[in-house]
Image (cartoon, rainbow, N blue to C red; front, side, top):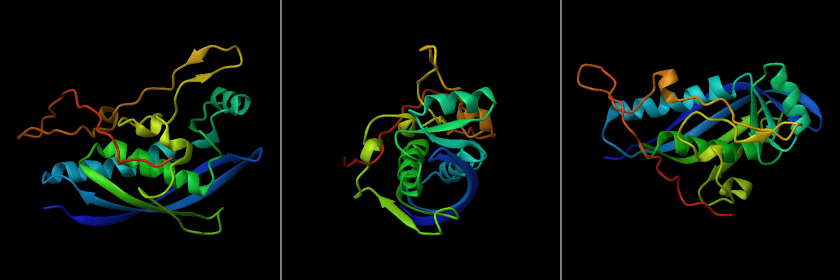
Length: 199
């Protein structure tokens, strides 16, 4: 039986916006529907959501992907950059979360909506679901990848293409299938498409 539920999350991160670094606290309420009777997959789905927000987004800098000079400066300083196809204001962050959380849950939990507010955004609540316009997130990108990726391919000032660090859910102990005695069963799990998007 499918179960409708919601859970609140909070995370701190940084935004490079209008040539300034803004530290911001976000509150997100994620509405979802279970899509499997396997309770282990429910728990892994929620844990993946929590890890993505707190560990991947937390203490990173969200930045527009074409701001190459600033990205290079930040990454040379060892700061993780989460690269957006447009300015990472609150509405854009909500759309990204809707797409990415659906991807990392791989159909085991269906994200039906994301409500997001932030301190820098004066606690205005931005709501997003599948009936809303996805804008640039309708295109394929790291936000559709099941793994805990947070940026795509970028170019340095020398025009050399580099790949973002490749993380796996195995790095977090959050694989899908667990054997009868708690042993992880590895396999090639195909990504499932997230809900239909509107441009």
